[in-house]
Image (spheres, protein in one colour):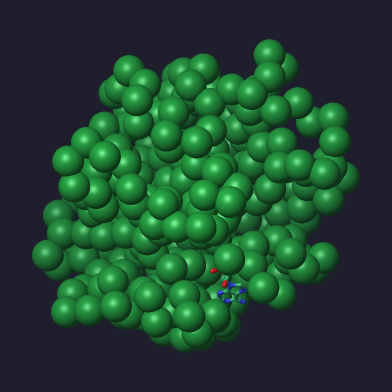
Length: 278
Ligand SMILES: C[S@@+](CC[C@H](N)C(=O)[O-])C[C@H]1O[C@@H](n2cnc3c(N)ncnc32)[C@H](O)[C@@H]1O
């Protein structure tokens, strides 16, 4: 497996994922008590959109580039501030990965733990966060980390599970990872990202989650393309376990406006529903 996120950095899927992530992290500011953010598949942390790799696909042109120059959406002020924080002035050169987005929301007493299996990406993370004592970078398997690192001592926080979905058993591993994490720490917020290509594996994934016994799972989907081929990333989804109060309503109002900016086809769609209610 040789997945490199730089080819996809800042595409519509990243924008959707990091917009939701920003709302989740912002909600943790509602209390003064410190929180912990755990990123099981952290990537490199920041991506140069002028690099050959990013330019080769140009995926960010249909993602963050569009949002960058669109009329601002009030719910995305913090997310866009995090993107601006990775750049200087009005030029969009760098795109922050989930770790850099998360760092924007860390207060002095909060902390984050970043897990990344690829040595090169891990080295980039270490360089990016060198000297920040709130950040721990580990060259460790993300699923093993779910067992070893939870619950965090703060007893409040968020786990992002964002694997590359190159392996056939990735859906099953995500569900298994979530189950064991939730058994250790039932009150944590968990956000799981997944791709929308073929529907059948996604439906099996939803069924496995619904059968897991875990409650309070919000299902959020965002598809700028029609789901008429399995050869393209048509859209993506996130499952949020223990979402903060009113996240469902915020997303129901935000996502159609975000789709207006990122739409690729008239039959693009968004969805927010409870996979399993409270
Ligand atoms: C989709 S990218 C992560 C993107 C990042 N979360 C973001 O939003 O900016 C997936 C990353 O997971 C890493 N990876 C793959 N399998 C892993 C595993 N078992 N444990 C930890 N990292 C893994 C890959 O090297 C890749 O960098």
